Every structure is written in C-alpha cells, then in structure tokens.
Image (cartoon, rainbow, N blue to C red):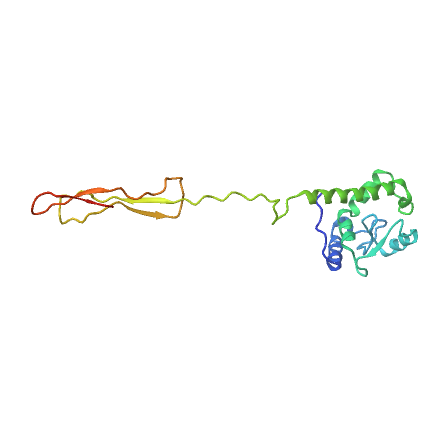
Length: 209
C-alpha cells in the first residue's frame, strides 16, 4: 500500500482529513445513512455523523477516539491513519466478520482485529516507504555521463608544389567539440622537406613543420 505523505503541520493534517471526505465511501456516516459526516473515529479510521459521534464518545476513548474535521486540530499521524483507513475498507471488514450491528460491533473481537490490522498496514507502508531511494542522496544511482566527442576535420594542402610562386601549405586541423571517439592525441606535425627552386639550381631546404 502506498503511504500518503506525512503532513508537516496541524493545518496540513486537517486539510488532508477534509479532502478525504470527498471520497464516495466517506460521504455517508459509517454507522447510519446520514450524509456528509464531519466527525471521525481515529481509532478505526472512519467518518461518522454527529449523532453517532456522541454514541462513540459514550464508549470511552479507549474504545473509539473521536475528532471533528472542522472544530479540532489534527496531528499528522492521525490524519495519515484516516487516509490509510476510510469507511470502505472498514465496512467490508466488519461485513465479512458478520458485525453489522453498529451499537455492538466495537466491543467485539473483530473490532480489536481491525484496529490491529489498520496499525499493521500503517507500519508496513512506513517500512516500504523508508526502503525507497531518496532524491538528492547517495542512494540514487547517478547515470554515467555521456563522453564528449570531438570530430576532427583535416584539410590537406599540396606540400610539394612544383610552382615556386605557390605558397607552402601544411595539414590544417580543425576540432569541434561534439564527440570523443577515443582517437590518439594529436602529435606535432612531422618534418617535411619542401623542394625549393632557385636560380642556381635545385637546392633542398628542410622546414620544420
């Protein structure tokens, strides 16, 4: 079961409880057909009308602890218990165990079983929630970064032009930061001999590139 977030304040807790009143199962009193119940038995996580609330109060807080959705302040834990509970699950449980009498069912063994079941569901949900990875912590495995790749463009010139007026050109390398492909690092360009023609014959000069 997914555990609802724990409210951070009494105001948030009260807002959560009131939002639960809009669920179809919670729009009718758990013990009678009265509409729009505004009282809760926190013990069983159910919504009740004012008349049924009075009867629950008469049982004592050790049987049913009551809270008003409109008049009382709510603790975060109480609000979350109401979110885990609700009229629907409680009605189904008591029906399965044959406890349909609203006046007597809260002193039965089935009522004790349901309180333990509700507490167990909350504990299980809390354990599951605490085992999940947390954002912004070391528990979240970071995905490996995609390596930056470099595309190498080479423009070749004529290194041994027979025309003396032609300029001597060497390999020109342009690097764009798009992808690194694991190429060997660029090394110093090797020495190359350029044939230079002169008036006195064909002298050869070595030019460091």
